[in-house]
Structures are given as structure tokens and as C-alpha cells.
Image 1 (cartoon, one colour):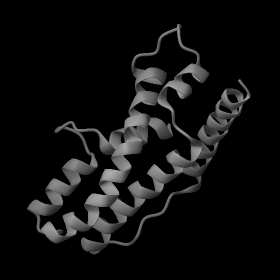
Image 2: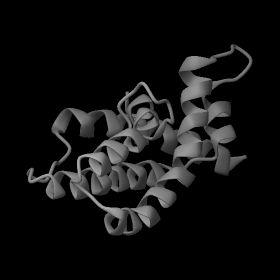
Image 3: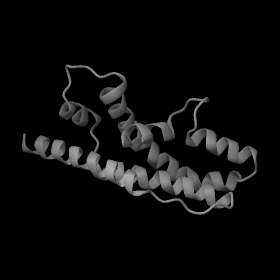
Length: 135
């Protein structure tokens, strides 16, 4: 699911594939340098502010699900809007493509199956958001 995938990109574990480790390896392999890090930092920081909300969704929807919170309660608690999930997706792709191009690879794009999952998530979020606005 999109939430778990976005969570994984920015988690901080040392034993997983995430942006922190990819950037560390890219520096070590001299694919990118300190100037590149300075260019990426604003994008990474902006992404992290949204990732915190994604982390809450992942935690309450999957990792630590409790029957006391409905799905609507979880989305309200995370205080995330559909546009923020799209923005995090776009920021993630921007980071990935920056490093990929520096490594001599082609730009990446999201495939249709990812778009379907994202659309499904947006629909759930919008329904939850509309209901909370009506209260």
C-alpha cells in the first residue's frame, strides 16, 4: 500500500533501503557530493514534515491497529490531507530522480498500479475529510 511504501522511504533504520541510506551510499560512491546534498536538503526537509503524518497513518492503520479507533479517527488523528500524500509522492520521486540522474540512470516515473493505489488512498482520505468537515 502507498502509506507503507512512503513510510519506508523515509524511515531511519540502518538495515533497510531508505533515502537516508541511499544518500549515504551515493556520497560514499561519489555519485553525489556535499553540494548535491545542499540542493536536496530543502526537498528532504519538506518531505519529512509530511512523512511524520504518514508515520502516524502507518502506525495506527497497520503496525499498532486498535479496535478503539475507526479508520476515520486515524485519518483525523494524522491530520493529513490528500494533497499532502500526493506532494510526498512527488517529493520522493524528485529525490529519487536527482540521485538517479547523477548516477547516469534515466528518470523514473510512477506506473499505473501505483496510481491505482494512490487513487484509492485519496478517495478514502477525501471521504474522511468530507465527513470531518461536515461535523
